Image 1 (tube, rainbow, N blue to C red):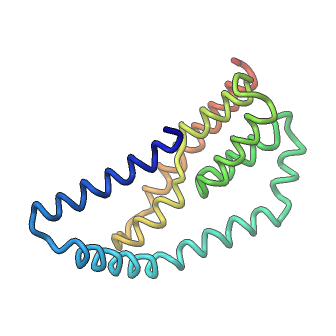
Image 2 (spheres, rainbow, N blue to C red):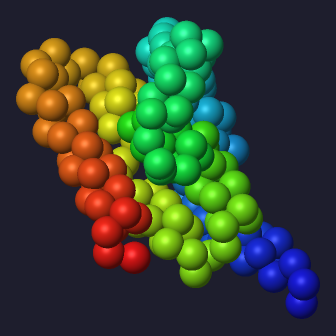
Length: 165
Protein backbone atom coordinates (compact mmCIF):
# COMPACT_ATOMS: atom_id res chain seq x y z
CA UNK A 1 0.00 0.00 0.00
CA UNK A 2 3.06 2.25 -0.33
CA UNK A 3 2.08 3.50 -3.76
CA UNK A 4 -1.58 4.20 -3.19
CA UNK A 5 -1.39 7.20 -5.53
CA UNK A 6 -0.79 4.85 -8.49
CA UNK A 7 -4.01 3.04 -7.70
CA UNK A 8 -5.94 6.29 -7.30
CA UNK A 9 -4.70 7.62 -10.65
CA UNK A 10 -5.47 4.33 -12.39
CA UNK A 11 -8.97 4.24 -10.92
CA UNK A 12 -9.53 7.86 -11.95
CA UNK A 13 -8.49 7.09 -15.55
CA UNK A 14 -10.73 4.01 -15.56
CA UNK A 15 -13.70 6.08 -14.36
CA UNK A 16 -13.11 8.60 -17.16
CA UNK A 17 -12.95 5.82 -19.75
CA UNK A 18 -16.10 4.16 -18.42
CA UNK A 19 -17.90 7.51 -18.42
CA UNK A 20 -16.91 7.96 -22.09
CA UNK A 21 -18.21 4.49 -22.93
CA UNK A 22 -21.43 5.19 -21.03
CA UNK A 23 -21.90 8.45 -22.99
CA UNK A 24 -21.03 6.59 -26.23
CA UNK A 25 -18.05 8.83 -27.05
CA UNK A 26 -14.96 7.84 -28.95
CA UNK A 27 -12.47 8.19 -26.08
CA UNK A 28 -9.36 7.95 -28.24
CA UNK A 29 -10.55 10.56 -30.73
CA UNK A 30 -11.58 12.90 -27.90
CA UNK A 31 -8.14 12.45 -26.31
CA UNK A 32 -6.31 13.20 -29.57
CA UNK A 33 -8.47 16.26 -30.28
CA UNK A 34 -7.93 17.58 -26.76
CA UNK A 35 -4.17 17.04 -27.02
CA UNK A 36 -4.10 18.86 -30.36
CA UNK A 37 -6.00 21.84 -28.94
CA UNK A 38 -3.65 22.04 -25.96
CA UNK A 39 -0.60 21.88 -28.22
CA UNK A 40 -1.94 24.92 -30.07
CA UNK A 41 -2.48 26.72 -26.74
CA UNK A 42 1.05 25.82 -25.66
CA UNK A 43 2.45 27.37 -28.81
CA UNK A 44 0.35 30.51 -28.24
CA UNK A 45 1.56 31.06 -24.66
CA UNK A 46 5.21 30.09 -25.22
CA UNK A 47 6.42 33.67 -25.97
CA UNK A 48 4.88 34.90 -22.71
CA UNK A 49 6.55 32.12 -20.70
CA UNK A 50 9.87 32.80 -22.42
CA UNK A 51 9.59 36.50 -21.60
CA UNK A 52 8.98 35.74 -17.91
CA UNK A 53 11.92 33.33 -17.84
CA UNK A 54 14.23 35.97 -19.33
CA UNK A 55 12.98 38.60 -16.85
CA UNK A 56 13.55 36.32 -13.84
CA UNK A 57 17.05 35.34 -14.96
CA UNK A 58 17.94 38.98 -15.71
CA UNK A 59 16.82 40.04 -12.23
CA UNK A 60 18.79 37.22 -10.68
CA UNK A 61 21.96 37.96 -12.69
CA UNK A 62 21.82 41.74 -12.11
CA UNK A 63 22.94 41.44 -8.49
CA UNK A 64 20.16 43.73 -7.31
CA UNK A 65 18.78 40.99 -5.05
CA UNK A 66 22.18 40.49 -3.42
CA UNK A 67 22.40 44.19 -2.57
CA UNK A 68 18.87 44.19 -1.16
CA UNK A 69 19.58 41.14 0.98
CA UNK A 70 22.76 42.59 2.51
CA UNK A 71 20.89 45.67 3.74
CA UNK A 72 18.36 43.79 5.93
CA UNK A 73 18.32 41.43 8.89
CA UNK A 74 15.76 39.17 7.23
CA UNK A 75 16.97 35.75 5.98
CA UNK A 76 18.06 35.98 2.35
CA UNK A 77 15.96 33.00 1.28
CA UNK A 78 12.84 34.71 2.61
CA UNK A 79 13.45 37.92 0.65
CA UNK A 80 14.19 35.99 -2.52
CA UNK A 81 11.02 33.94 -1.97
CA UNK A 82 9.03 37.17 -1.71
CA UNK A 83 10.54 38.55 -4.89
CA UNK A 84 10.03 35.41 -6.96
CA UNK A 85 6.61 34.43 -5.61
CA UNK A 86 4.62 36.58 -8.11
CA UNK A 87 6.57 35.05 -10.99
CA UNK A 88 7.37 31.43 -10.20
CA UNK A 89 5.60 29.14 -7.77
CA UNK A 90 8.24 26.45 -8.16
CA UNK A 91 11.11 28.80 -7.32
CA UNK A 92 9.26 30.20 -4.30
CA UNK A 93 8.30 26.72 -3.12
CA UNK A 94 11.87 25.45 -3.36
CA UNK A 95 13.03 28.47 -1.35
CA UNK A 96 10.38 27.75 1.28
CA UNK A 97 11.60 24.16 1.49
CA UNK A 98 15.17 25.44 1.99
CA UNK A 99 13.96 27.76 4.76
CA UNK A 100 12.15 24.90 6.50
CA UNK A 101 15.20 22.64 6.19
CA UNK A 102 17.53 25.34 7.51
CA UNK A 103 15.45 26.85 10.32
CA UNK A 104 12.86 24.12 11.04
CA UNK A 105 9.16 23.84 10.38
CA UNK A 106 8.15 25.40 13.71
CA UNK A 107 10.65 28.26 13.57
CA UNK A 108 9.46 31.80 13.02
CA UNK A 109 11.22 31.82 9.63
CA UNK A 110 9.47 28.59 8.58
CA UNK A 111 6.05 29.83 9.69
CA UNK A 112 6.48 33.22 8.00
CA UNK A 113 7.68 31.53 4.81
CA UNK A 114 4.62 29.26 4.81
CA UNK A 115 2.34 32.25 5.35
CA UNK A 116 3.99 34.06 2.44
CA UNK A 117 3.66 31.00 0.20
CA UNK A 118 0.02 30.42 1.09
CA UNK A 119 -1.05 34.05 1.23
CA UNK A 120 0.26 35.18 -2.15
CA UNK A 121 -0.12 34.08 -5.75
CA UNK A 122 1.99 33.76 -8.88
CA UNK A 123 0.22 36.82 -10.24
CA UNK A 124 2.46 37.63 -13.18
CA UNK A 125 2.55 34.04 -14.35
CA UNK A 126 -1.17 33.41 -13.95
CA UNK A 127 -2.27 36.65 -15.56
CA UNK A 128 0.30 36.32 -18.35
CA UNK A 129 -0.80 32.83 -19.28
CA UNK A 130 -4.55 33.18 -18.85
CA UNK A 131 -4.90 36.64 -20.34
CA UNK A 132 -2.81 35.63 -23.35
CA UNK A 133 -5.06 32.63 -23.86
CA UNK A 134 -8.32 34.57 -23.53
CA UNK A 135 -7.08 37.58 -25.55
CA UNK A 136 -8.13 40.08 -22.85
CA UNK A 137 -6.52 43.47 -23.60
CA UNK A 138 -7.45 45.75 -20.67
CA UNK A 139 -5.26 44.27 -17.94
CA UNK A 140 -3.77 47.26 -16.13
CA UNK A 141 -5.98 47.01 -13.05
CA UNK A 142 -5.69 43.23 -12.86
CA UNK A 143 -1.91 43.38 -12.50
CA UNK A 144 -2.06 46.26 -10.02
CA UNK A 145 -4.57 44.52 -7.74
CA UNK A 146 -2.84 41.14 -7.99
CA UNK A 147 0.60 42.53 -7.24
CA UNK A 148 -0.81 44.69 -4.45
CA UNK A 149 -2.13 41.50 -2.83
CA UNK A 150 1.34 39.95 -3.13
CA UNK A 151 2.98 43.02 -1.60
CA UNK A 152 0.53 42.99 1.31
CA UNK A 153 1.18 39.28 1.93
CA UNK A 154 4.95 39.89 1.79
CA UNK A 155 4.83 42.87 4.18
CA UNK A 156 2.56 41.04 6.64
CA UNK A 157 4.78 37.97 6.65
CA UNK A 158 7.85 40.17 7.27
CA UNK A 159 6.04 41.89 10.15
CA UNK A 160 5.16 38.49 11.56
CA UNK A 161 8.74 37.39 11.21
CA UNK A 162 10.23 40.47 12.87
CA UNK A 163 7.71 41.42 15.55
CA UNK A 164 5.10 38.80 16.34
CA UNK A 165 6.61 35.33 16.04
